[in-house]
Image 1 (tube, one colour):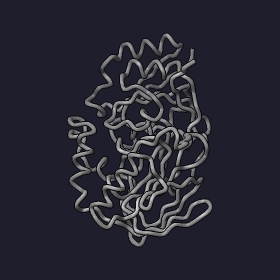
Image 2 (spheres, rainbow, N blue to C red):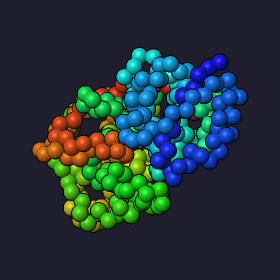
Image 3 (cartoon, one colour):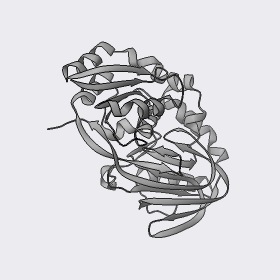
Image 4 (cartoon, one colour):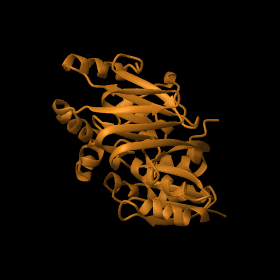
Length: 299
């Protein structure tokens, strides 16, 4: 019988992992898996558990938000033998679930985790010691996720992000940055810089299919938003982003395997919605097809 590790973050989504847990376990049993359950107690537990125990399993299924998935995969990329990954989304924005087409209902998601189609997924390396799966960023809205209290996230969901983000608009700060990517260099004042491998970022930026985002092409999408001079230009930026116009005066998208940021002073970064620390120099490298994750088999 195949072995499956069910890794649960009990603090995500108001403890929603309890909903339908019996059916979830039955789905894994009927798919031929012997299930072992592990719980995280704090940040940092998921990568440690995934690295230590992951190689002993055929599949690891994490239950939690994007941060839990990110930490699980970060643990797996540190070992050579990597099991396939399933995801039962229980977080606030669930950008990864939106990109992968995984439903928020745990029973439905478990059917995909049990018998879906594995696809390759790129992983980002952040400097030498961190990883991310969908975004590394600084600037507008990036501090909302990890500064908003967990109970407020659970109570208000995406509204918590929106309310906190709007409250910051009058105080938008801009940072000068030198951005070196494969094939060029950009220097300017930016209110947002994001290195992404996703079609959804913070539940606010949604990249349409015609933008050509691939999760396994070995390339990042690098989104740069220049500093507006007035409220009208802020409106133009929002309009461009909503319309997926990334070659405008203020919004640019680049594609690159690597990217280096040089700033004049340390700035706070977010990695997959969590605090990534304050950095003046950042180097991101794409690790192509580093893991395999289960999505719906639509055959």
